[in-house]
Image 1 (cartoon, rainbow, N blue to C red):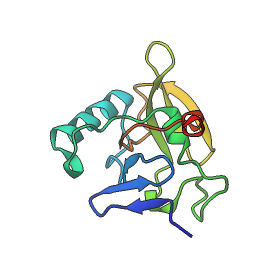
Image 2 (tube, helix red, strand yellow; image 1 turned 45 degrees about the horizontal axis):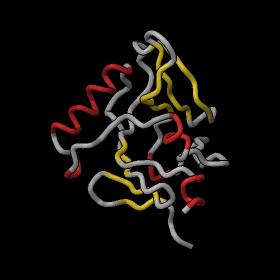
Image 3 (tube, rainbow, N blue to C red; image 1 turned 90 degrees about the vertical axis):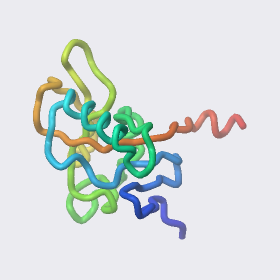
Length: 136
């Protein structure tokens, strides 16, 4: 059986189902949504893993990592991604409200963007929609 997530050995993981490339380790601490954007900008300035097109993932992209059952740390996330449970997304809901995905409760939530309790898992690449795959 093929492994869905491939550790590229450079701090990134490729998702074999979506072809998205994810940052394997997260930001070193919990940060606000504006700090999350700055963190991704810094990854690009440093050409993390040889690339400068890192970005905050969308809710939809973060949800592609959601497992249907808990792992041994009670997270709905593959163990290759560590033990952080909440990640900011690029999506917002009105003035100063940003979305995040919680792999402990298993869903998308929103909170004030200055809330300091979430991390960042940067991504690169384009997600392929299921409808687009079947139309080809």
